[in-house]
Amino acid sequence: MPKDRTISAEEMAQQKDYINKIKQMTDARETKPLAFVETYGCQQNSSDSEKLKGMLDEMGFGFCESPKEADFVLYNTCAVRENAELKVFGNIGALKHQKRRNPELMVGVCGCMMQQPHIAETIRKKYTHVDLCFGTHALYRFPQLLYDVMKKQRVFDNANEDGSIFEDVAYHRDGPPLAKIPIMYGCNNYCTYCIVPYVRGRERSRDKEHILAEVRAVAAEGYKEVMLLGQNVNSYGNDLADGLSFAQLLREVCRVDGIERVRFMTSHPKDLSDELIAAMAEEEKICKQLHLPIQSGSDRVLKLMNRKYTRAQYMELIRKVRERMPDIVLTTDIIVGFPGETNEDFEETLSVLKEVAYDSIFSFIYSKRVGTPAASMEDCLTDEEKHQNFDRMLALQNEISKRKNDMYLNTVQRVLTEGVSKTDAAVLTGRTEGGKVVNFAGDTALCGRFVDVKITKTQTWSLFGECL
Ligand code: SAH
Ligand code: SF4
Ligand code: F3S
Image (cartoon, rainbow, N blue to C red; front, side, top):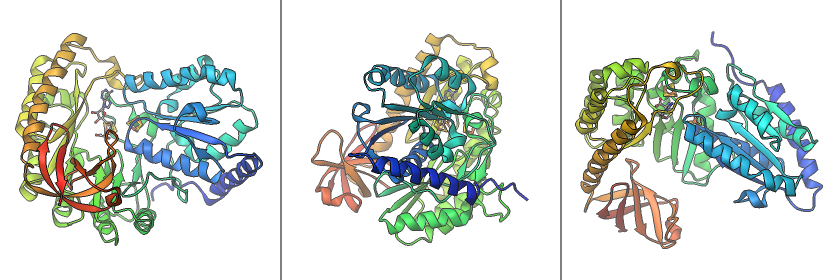
């Protein structure tokens, strides 16, 4: 039998008590205290932030758009690359003066970075204006931790645990039409460059009934599209007794009325099954879009990365996917400059990009992560060579992306309108089924609705069109 990783009802009731205690404290104030919550990293982290904000809602907090107006600043951090960490340290450092001027300000840091012992130690010693520091495993204890902070204690909760799941939490979601639904947490894959398994714990799947209840609930609230989240969604259910596969779960999600589009992130190539490809092809609601990280085109490097597939196996997946869904939008992740990567290895990555012709890629220069196996591997290339390779790759991909987008010219796309453009209030922005961003002029009343848009102009990263 799988270990029951769900936090018990008693423990959740205890946290509820802390929520109520804090609510009494905030109710006693003349005005609502304001929280500023900023999120770094992946969709998983933004989903966690929706839970943290949900708890803050219940505790009587309001929200503000800048740390300057806040009574409580919370950074939910990402540890995947060094630049993400540096940004967080910069932002925490910047609060030092504000805290000196206003000692009542509460400063909190949480998320993946804080699950690393050396980072928590740095915060403890060098960032003494931080009141609250907790890792991913302590998320459900947030009410208790914040209560202690409000009672003027400095709180650290970074214990390493296997990882748990907690249900029955009120989300403060980003508005319709898109809802993020976590279906599993953690990762067991231990790619040699990656910190995620160390900061997120072992793979654990949510119970199917909890997931479906959540999908039904967001449908009732008017959400039209769900994004099912996990570090490796293809291994959903491996740890559960009921044996439901990810493909079966997807089909059940498609049966929920009101939800018109279903997406998921991320698929590991080693676990992408024929059953999943069939479900994608057959279910109309599943968007014809697949993010399938390859990381490198060289078998030697893939082996060093512990990715457990070869280039040929990966290409066979792409062939099968395209055979069933010829127009599918494909994206990937690539790491440039992995330790031991040579210029010849890099050429193989370029040749994969040409061969697959992805719609777009997410590319990163390798960043050394403390405690991962790759951190002690020998480097072959200089930083300069890595940057040169990176730039060459971007130039190649930009050409491919533009060519791919050009194919949409004069077609009519069904677009789910997400909101108003950040740069122009008269322009709406939305996505095609394949996940491509489309900008078009239109009335804000269209937000959250499906519209047919004729594509009149294309760029590398987005499409432009006219609402029909
Ligand atoms: N679980 C997902 C994504 C995890 S992190 C997956 O397996 O695909 C997102 C991306 O960050 C990874 O796909 C990888 O390309 C990149 N990444 C992870 N660790 C990195 C590191 N140490 N340096 C550079 N990029 C990294
Ligand atoms: Fe990291 Fe690999 Fe797990 Fe993705 S599959 S989260 S890259 S260890
Ligand atoms: Fe970053 Fe944690 Fe996601 S390390 S990429 S926020 S799982």
